[in-house]
Amino acid sequence: MLLQQTRVAQALPYYVRLLARYPNLRSLASSDPAELLKLWQGAGYYARASRMHAAARAIQQKHGGRFPSSVEELERLPGVGPYMARAIASLAFGAPVLALEANGLRVAARLTGDRADPAVAKVRERLAAWLDHELPPEAAGEYNEALMELGETICLPRSPLCGECPIAFACVAFRTLDDPGSLPQRAPRASKRHEVAAIVAVRRGARWLLQKRTEPGLLRGLWEFPGGKPQRGETLVHAARRELAEETGLRVDRLVPVGVVRHAYSHFSVELHLFRAQAPARHLASYPARWLTPEEIRKLPLPRATEKALSLLGVSPPE
Ligand code: SF4
Image (cartoon, rainbow, N blue to C red; front, side, top):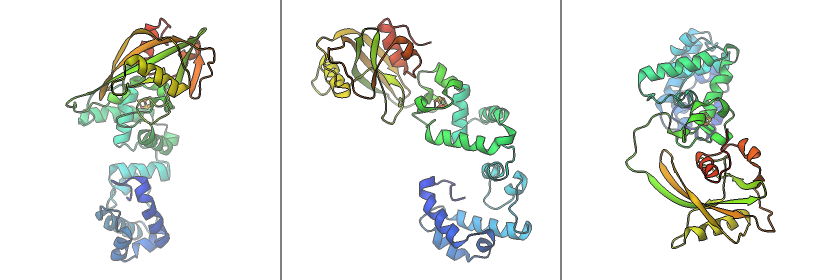
């Protein structure tokens, strides 16, 4: 109940405080509602406190102090809705039921590549039916928790961290869309940001220099060519040289323009000016850059823009 409308980090101190004061159901049921409210102070949505108190009393009186385990009984408790009833039943009692909330719907829409709007009841039912079909009856709690955690930590609403996703291999949105974060459907934005950047493909024999994106965001964990945005008044070729040196420590003599990669994400579009260069004699690039053969590149998670750049360079695109 504390977690309704509230993030874990925010709810945690209250959880600890409440548990210290009411270590079991009996003590909560017989507590003074005003004292409970005081302990709740600052957590917001105060109706939850009185519902929790009422639920504790109902369990004491109607269930002899034993926490009910079926979805039907749980749903009859004050303050317990369909989602919470299913979450408790599966997580605490191993009931083979799906607990579905916004995170799960988003993950399901992306995994199945469903472009329809989950705000529509029929679409929600379709996604729920798919998740229900996939649910392992012997591990429903873990399954529900995995869905919640994936949506909370990796399959984020706007910028999913696909490079870190343990089930990217099974995700239709990841395999088929330039921007998996564009699912599920949302109301279109008024205008998109447009970014221009310079990127450099440095070659050493049969190997190319790529680096892993480590900063949080849309492409975290994916591999790309070094580069970045030009500073005010800076030409693209200068930006390419400077970014390469800053990011990898490499200084190259000659940069040859190869072409322009254009790519649109859900909230912005990019125009990447690609340059080619030969590795200098001293070519120890610093982490997280690596010299990679096309075969090695093929095995790495790549953003669509890097795939397009590889095609421009004549390096066979990943399978
Ligand atoms: S691959 Fe990306 S879009 Fe697909 S489930 Fe994982 S994080 Fe979500």
